[in-house]
Length: 47
Image (cartoon, rainbow, N blue to C red):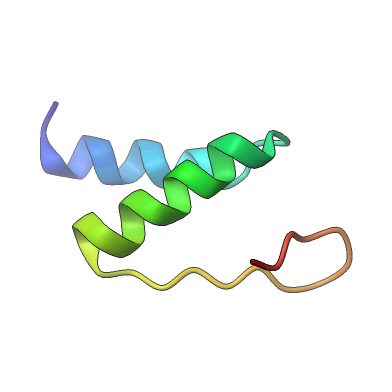
């Protein structure tokens, strides 16, 4: 899968309701793409 498609898919996974999916997407974006994701607001998971 092209890098842009992988990144787009990971960003999409940040908006799921499954904690495991969001955590995996966050780790991928952090380690593979250098993005730091911050979850803010009510109902967000802060880890």
